[in-house]
Length: 421
Length: 72
Image (cartoon, rainbow over all chains, first blue to last red; front, side):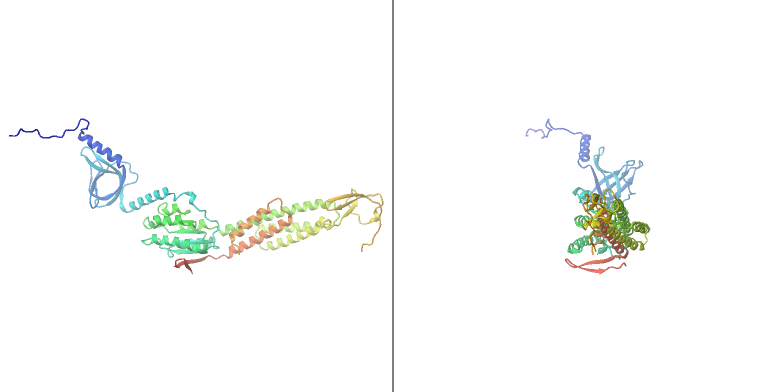
């Protein structure tokens, strides 16, 4: 009989560690918690039980696998969790961990919500983060919106409330504009493709020479599902790439759409978008009036200054000044100004006539005019009254001759009458 | 015809020039007259403006036609 041989055994080497069960579960737990962390998990609820403690235990499964899950009562939920039930498709936020006493790994949820709306919300947040990281929302990419756009593009449904709202605001505030409508559906399966196509169409049309100043893209309010096209990545990228300044105009139940973040300007509704791109013609007319009033005031100041200069220089002069006429015209001008300020239309004409006459008078009364033409004025030295008769002078008298920009002092040698006429 | 925007800018420039100290009376009168003409034109156009709305249809790539658009 062959000598019995001891059964072969495999012993751990001295350097190798022997775990206890507790240790291995703890290690698995640490690896899962640190390696996976918090995640979003989607699945169908089954085997739902509520413990006396209020904790929920259930299984999340898809077609091929399942994982046990729990939601502990008293955990602070970031958002209120929906009432869940068996068979419900949910999206839950939580972490993977190991229940050490049983060596069972499980998903501990802190937030559970039905998959429909939740999924959209999550997709929204993920897309928003992605585009933001790419820099699509950066303020330096935002083009300024022109203050008085002449050509406004509008992308929306031609049968919706939005187009009506936009056009009636523009009609009231800024009918100077030409509006170009690019029709697109704004909800449903075709909406994304049609919106992108409409944006490209507007770009091409603008480049063909229409030269659009601004583009409003939007629709009226709706549910998150209705607005889905405005949260679509390709629509967002089309808006971002559009060389025409874009104003997003999506009626909101939620705060923002992805399009709002990429647009150059965000409006909360289509009407608001129309208001944001248009000056108010009534305000503009008031501003124009103000500019005219300001100009008129400046002009009056010029005239007053000129009158003062005139009056000062006339003191030493001989020319006949239509002083009273000047005064009357000045008053008439003031009156016209006043009436103009009160908005009376015929005051325009009066003002213009008064001004015209006043400037004529000023031209005629300009004491330097004859001097400019080469005439001069002679007085006795130190006197203001002009000499009209040579008989008043004798040889040896001192006289002053006024020519343009100079006074000449002379002594009379001889006085001789001449035939002027 | 120049756009309202261009005329508004011109009016602003005229007004500013009028406020300069080195403006002669003759120039001031001319500027004022120009400003008033601009203002009258702008206000007339603002009053008379009527919103024009066209629907743009792309017949073929790069070929556009426009149709008058009336609210449904």
